[in-house]
View 1: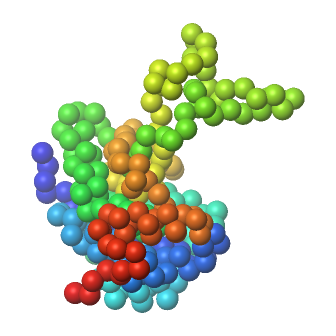
View 2: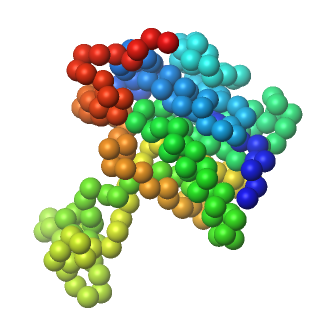
View 3: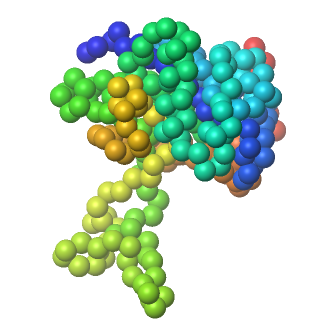
Length: 252
């Protein structure tokens, strides 16, 4: 197993969130949301550098205080709500390699709006990439997934041209009558992504190449897109840390 990979970790955090304004630096159990991701990334063995890609000076200041580096500000064309994540990654990789005058082997992205992802899951995704590579499966990417709460073969429906509801997917043998007999499907979880840098430099989308999943528990598969998400994550994080209601993270 190649343990000498030079790993760059980048945490993306744009300033113009619409669903939950200011969510990346909003306090969560006494810490800014982004600080949870930075703290965990800094604990993962083998990560050479933890960088935050942002267009916001306010986020940059919080990120530096939490221990990350912010060597550049993201250009405006990559900071809009419709900017592609893959292109943001490509920019961050190129900017860091140019500044560092070195090439990285693996690029790790951690989504800061999922503070339920732990150091164990980040390291596990990296280990899965390495294991797949050692098995000769030629992975281009590994990213977090979780077993889907709804299955398109069993309980997801969509309307036809007349509005009549049909199953979203079907098998050649007909309708699936029991959930247990439906093929396994997974949710793409905003959490952790591990990419070969050669692939990141040349591809146009995460799924252009050979991407594999790293399964995480359903209670870690939430990210902040709404106020309801924030409430759910706060509850789950408090339970994860064994905190009583109303308690914050103990000071260190």
